[in-house]
Length: 160
Image (cartoon, rainbow, N blue to C red; front, top):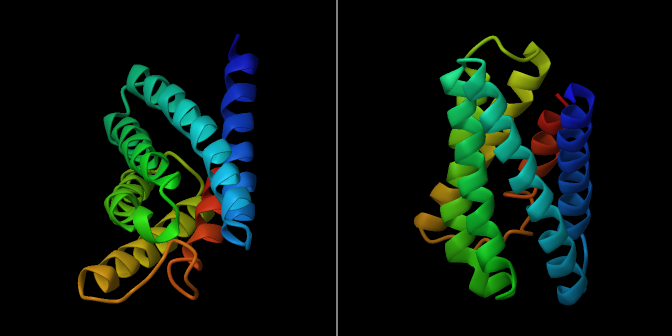
């Protein structure tokens, strides 16, 4: 049973990371939105399972981190079909939740140091991106260097 759980979580994080990162670099709106729709669902499922696991282990901070990520990813999924410009409000609501989640899972010594550091780098990059949008910058989820620079760090964190 434990192996099936870990396989399900690893598969969800791998699919989410791969399809999400690939979607970021797609020029086609339809393809990007499809890849992002595919990436969001396994991430929500994987983080729901991880929430339950860490809650059962008594690690409330990490469990709350995974639950917070689930909430942020759900916001991003909700705005995805609207297209890039129209998705900005749900995106700006979702990525600070990602950042909070990454910080929550990084505070305890539960995971390897390298993973905790990649999580913190991603969190900072996402928070800076949100601040820029709130202060008037016209950033899309695919804008470079921010917020795009945060995605590889997020995917590296999934590997942890």
